Image 1 (cartoon, rainbow, N blue to C red):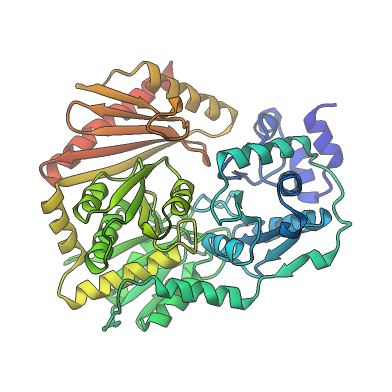
Image 2 (image 1 turned 60 degrees about the horizontal axis):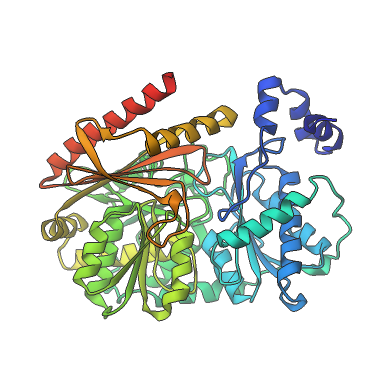
Length: 541
């Protein structure tokens, strides 16, 4: 019997069973061409029936594998898991499956009783002395996606070694098994006191007091988990002019007004900016559905300008360093994050640690450097100050952003003024990202072939020669092996290409350094058009 036939026989969920019955041959291939692979980012896929999709059977199997890993690697008194979920479709239902399967294996779970930010699960894992944490989330992906993320006992995303061990156990586990015989006493609700302690610690990482909190803030949680903690912390600090985007306030996994609920996307910011214009607000804050990413738009003379994560990260780093003692401290960033941040860190005598793409690597470094950790950020809107959470945290970042904005405003300085000062001091750096989506079995093959082409064939980007090509798949610069290629050009620019570990995407990162903003934008346009043309030519072959 084939895999499709097995699922058709075993699936007892009416909706998924009907989906299986209605599949044509192409849909069957896309649903069963692979099993969702489990890595350091856990699982992520499109909701639906099949081994290549996210559904309760895939979640149960993953949790059974995690349970075996826990039993093999931790003493019985450590068999505790913190569980959380975001506002996505099926997130609550999947979290219930997680808790039931854990209980079936005599493992205790502590679960939030409402959708909560991913960083709150990282915190709860540490605070409740759990051996692992599980979050049901697909972060900023469109509504058709969901995912399964695992933390270790330190609240960090699991290491490659742990992921391999868990995946090995998952592959030994069945999709269809009866886990309904479980003891309900193994499932407990995370108390309000844990949440309150988290907010107390967030408040403590502020850089300095804000004496005038009258700035007018528009906030959108993009129908996600940020609504409660972000508004709670801002109100604690004293911000009273807080305007919520009503259409994006309620928990809603359909994301009706923002099909791409990613604060990196201009479209996700549009409604918030409209609210800002209507209310003459100073700043717009937007957090993604699991509230680990944040983006902002700030008022200019005639409009609102969205700051990139690189710009915002550099501003926060400089603000923190200017207002606190950071000598001999450590700043962490990913290799695809702007080089300008390293120049700022160097100016303040901070040591910079560059890590692979993914905030998990920044989280791991906090353990190594301890109290010397000052700040970390990545170009995809992830920021962290403090060590009580070991993942990017948009609650902490939102508080710091508003503090920085308000204090500069009280001094008569705008964030654009400050940013231009940084450019004058360190040179104009333009960093952009272009993504190319290729879904399904065919798309997976296309991404692999394009990466091989960049790795072995490409020798120049248009008229600019590649003078150095770093292939991180070879395990260079004391970093783990990763499918990432960095190309240094003879025009003082660089391009990084990588396949996403969590999405069906090929991502290109452009780092442009020229004398002026206009020159940088012109160069970025030229290089991106050339890369687009190269990819198009390969797709036609």
